[in-house]
Image (cartoon, rainbow, N blue to C red):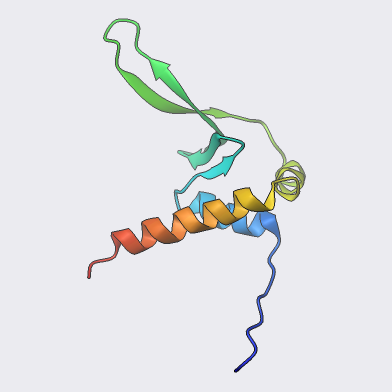
Length: 96
């Protein structure tokens, strides 16, 4: 049986790829996104007049070095779940 080698990538490269593809990174039940040039955590916003809720991204001011450190602290489960979600969404979007 041929040996399969897995190349380990830095978590920042993985997270950046996921975020730039439009998928969220899930961390401790929180959804983090990069949307419309803003990186941050997703929250619900309710219009007081109509009662309509929408998701918004609360941007965080973070340097590249800060992003890399944030990614290095991500649990492995968060990275694996985000990769799984990205692959599933890509597969579902493909015509058969």
